[in-house]
Length: 200
Image (cartoon, rainbow, N blue to C red; front, side, top):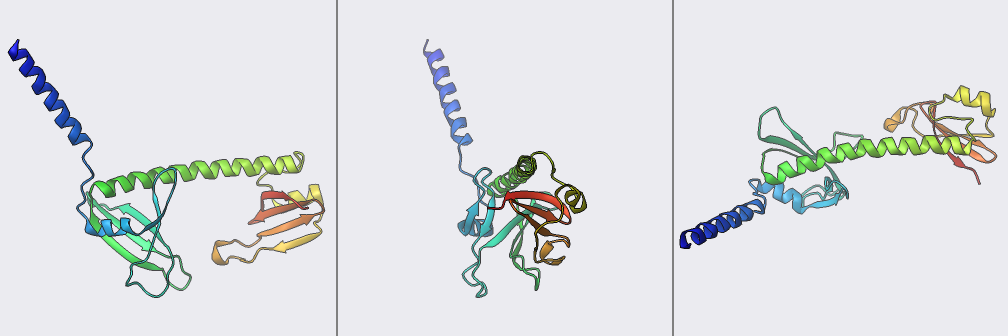
């Protein structure tokens, strides 16, 4: 009887020890990544992925939140972290690190992967919503993706054409504009119908 009790106690103790190991806090190998985590400004709510971080205290006078990117390298157990600001004058890189993998970095890689998956889902949903809105506002006459000449054949010439500043600059393709009708505004991106709104 005593032996069975002793065995039961040992089993319970081993189970408790294993549970303790399962909830162990993540191990940090990288002081650099700890510093980056301390400067996180914004995370994606659903995935927990880091979206932006503060510049270091000793950074240049430009005080803006910086974008964050982390990628695995061809070498196992290494990542490259880039902290940058998209600027037209240069590549805008403020910090770049090649770091050994640790628990926190692995978790961030999972977060970033989930964020990318969510972004695709969100973009698909937004596109579906815009397509539905175009059809509703035009009583099914127009569809998402129609070219400007197809829209004009159905709706006629617009009252006003509002040019969207770009013409190839800042990632905006030429033929990006808004056609204004008495009760409707139609948005074209690269000559293709992409959105509609009431013109009140």
